[in-house]
Image 1 (spheres, rainbow, N blue to C red):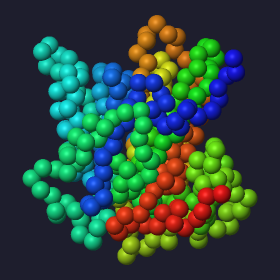
Image 2 (image 1 turned 45 degrees about the vertical axis):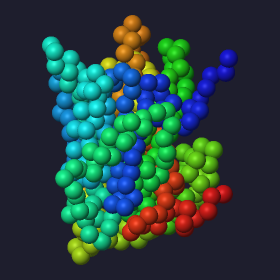
Image 3 (image 1 turned 90 degrees about the vertical axis):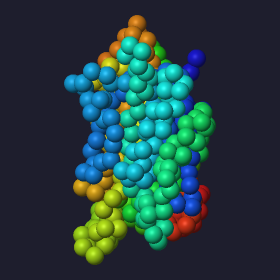
Image 4 (image 1 turned 120 degrees about the vertical axis):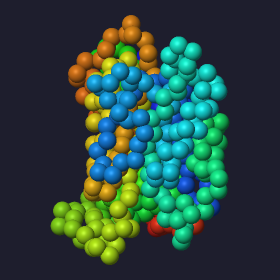
Length: 355
């Protein structure tokens, strides 16, 4: 039997057995919510690299703390307002009898991260809120739509996402291969690409990490032979960076996401995967991990079988490298699949044509 070393059948994070994704979006106000969950809780870790994160329950996932579990993970628009989406998911999980049980109490654990998308329309939509947070409503819809299939581009928390040069969005990818213990495991990533940085090599159409492209998944341009060493200052960085008058236009962006595997991993090795996953952001966006970004990556495992042997360090190195590539590919697919709505930046497909 031939060993598989290729994306999973969907090229989505849901190729990892036990992972489901749901999303909902409101194009009128330009925001959305994405929920990652499953039938069973995940082992989880997190790594935060951006200088301006908006998160909830990340301390719970620190290695020195006791739990290291997530019943769902929420990625949301809305900046700090969007953290309210996690409360809705917590209520829905409790109604479904899911959560960490202490005596008679059931406590669903829902780590989350948010992006800033509050200025999509001329007037910030926080001034238009009713009595119930729109992110709670969107979270409710997202949770009820959770399945193995979901959409990329301007959906979920990627609805109002932008990058330095183009419309951002929701992206995902996966990879499957065999490891030294003889087992075949799948890894996958889902990201919301709302970066301060530029995803393109110079002015495009090639993506900065176009060399990672598989089966024309983000336009078919692949690796570019263009030399960019002499134009880093003038083309790769958005001109607004360093100009005080336009600083507020770029000061609240981020890449958030989840990487997943069906391999049996310790929390320490999940933490290592979360750390390595951030390399995918750096490969696909320039600059990355800036003081204005809130880059946050959660790492989860769906495999709770304690009888399976832990992967060795070489396998973790290989798996982390594949996960890093998945994050980069997901960042590019988020931009490639994005569509225009209301007041936003141009999309890749508006400016360029796929080969």
